[in-house]
Length: 66
Image (cartoon, rainbow, N blue to C red; front, side, top):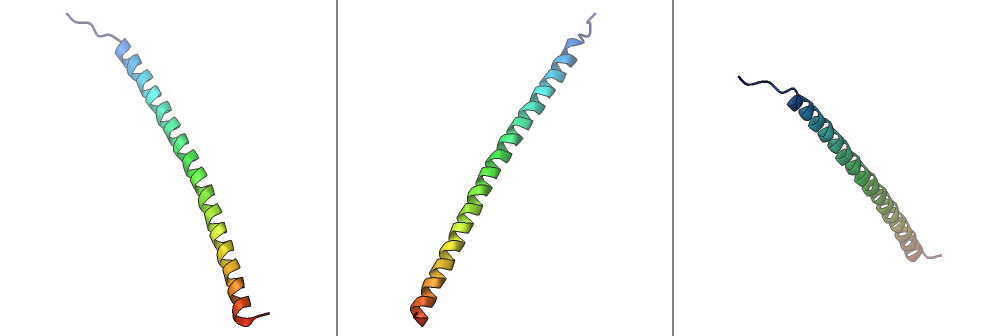
């Protein structure tokens, strides 16, 4: 006659909790990478906009003279 061991259910619960913690850590790291990437995207956009504004100003001065 075989007996049912209650410990596998506890082991499964612990494994599930560890998997959830791992998923939370991975999600947190992903969001942190996305935040840093977004910062550089904004910085590059602002730099490009400033360069275009400067180039437009130079073109106006060259075309119409001052």
